[in-house]
Length: 347
Image 1: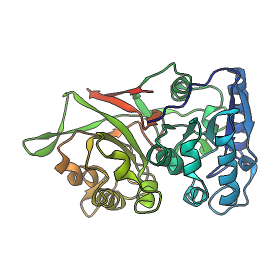
Image 2: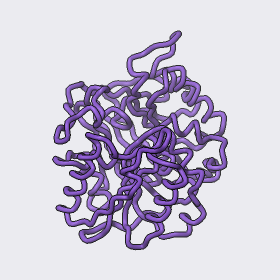
Image 3: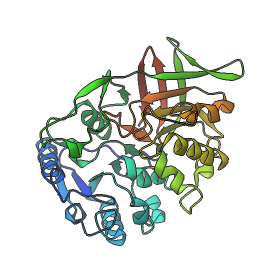
Image 4: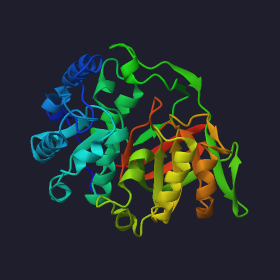
């Protein structure tokens, strides 16, 4: 796996919108604030024109335009990192026009984004053997930076190799578009990890027992991954061959039934055959929901029980803030004990 060079003051960071942009308030002001924050840290920031566009359907602009800007930034030797302007819904249409063969041959650089950006983060890792960060988007870097953004920049700067979970999380309805420009998330919900271990040929939830796993981090937003499965962008079995994989998965719009169907599909596609463990983030739409006996927990562990590997659920990954920035493609050591989680990455 190719790890991009670390960035340093004086380097150029580009903002681009291969999915949704920042053309409307409050995201527009947040983007300009993020630019100031990064410039005060010593970086030069270039805002791509797609960040200001909103003439697309489901994304900022025409996917051809978005793909060209993304390619231009990635192939520009002066640009050392790209941060996505936002998540969204239809970045899958953008990657139809991304030349991953060129990206694979080019010098790797950091790409940062979450949610719909799984379309780029995951494909960089599986198609280009290049690590990328599943983490905050542009508006999240506004003042004041939280531990999540500091950790993300620390990873890109080569100063941080280890990230930790948080004691509490924010109410699910508090995405950045629901906040004022200088407002940050109110962490008011108590976090409770649900850990499962294979015991006596079955999987059981355990308490106050250490869980450890190691392998290459792979994954992202389950909604996107199941959409990529079986397409020309699916080279997962080739990418994971002879590698132990820690699957990092989280769901946005999927119901409990949708999560279970998605897990079934990826399993049947052979994605999980080399799994050494699963790190499952708090789901957004499916949180505390049940459909015909299926909930956010048994939607996952009942189908994955056969792999006899640890599963950590309701982790700080995904659409409910805060979330740990994770380097998809990096070899990692994950440990969990007494409602804590730690991820140490070789990056």
